[in-house]
Image (cartoon, rainbow, N blue to C red; front, side, top):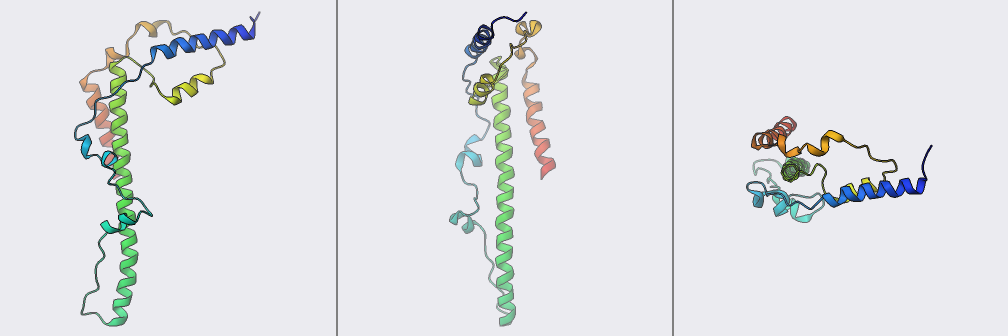
Length: 170
C-alpha cells in the first residue's frame, strides 16, 4: 500500500531541506606558503600565450658551424624550443594539479573539524535535486561525529598521501 506520490515527494523535499540547513560555508585555513603557489600567483605558462614563449631560452648556433649546418641547427633549435615549452607546460600542469589536491585536503580537514561530511557546494545542491526516493535513515551515524576520528596525524597522513601520489607521477 503506497501513499500519495505527491505527499512522498513533499516528504523527500522536506528531508533534503533539513539536510541543507545543516550545511554551512566553511573557509579552510590556507596552506603554508600559499602566496607562492602557482595557482595563486598565476605565473604558470599557457600554450598560445605570447609571454609563455619568453621564458624558454633559444640558443644561437655556434659561430664555427658552416652555413648549411647553422640553418639545420636553427631548425632543430626551433623544435627543441617547442619541446622545452611543452615540458614546462606539463611540469606546471603537474604543479597546479598537486596544489589543487593540497587545497582539497585542507578543505576536507576544515569540513571534518566542522563535522560536515559533504561540502556546501553547487554540486551538492544539484545532487540533492536529483533525489526521488526517501533517503535511508542512518540510526547510528547521526550520533557519531566525523570529528571524533580526525586529528593532526590524520591530516598529515592525507598530505603525505598527496605527496606520495605526485612523487610517483614525476
